[in-house]
Image (tube, rainbow, N blue to C red; front, side, top):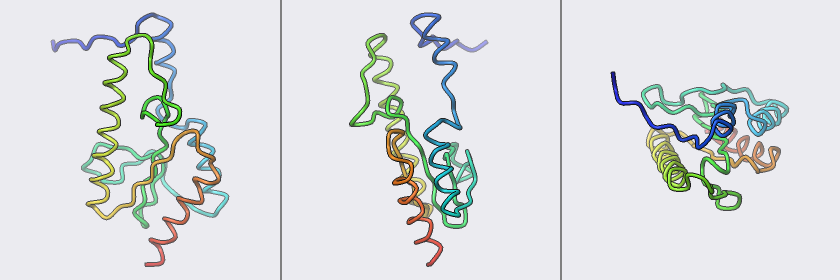
Length: 143
């Protein structure tokens, strides 16, 4: 059998908390999707914009080639709200750095494929974010 990855959880309580984190349909995602839907926009949820790239966008507008990612402040290193983990700080700093690096790789791959990647922080106002997304989608549809 392959080597088992060491657990990142420092205690059973931390493990339980980490396991309860949602991968999709978070409150910020749902708020953004409600706002987009109210604007008359239709989209795919949790979809790969580029089938060969193992990255899933939270909201995808395939005809307009717009991919939206709602990034969590802790997991993606928000410059305003990111907090440094006290326990296992080195692991989490490396994890966030890898996430940010992967986000950049994803954005570059999408741009090269003529997509517009839009990154929204979880703390952003969902209506303001929806306007940004709607503007991008509508600009691509009119071309």
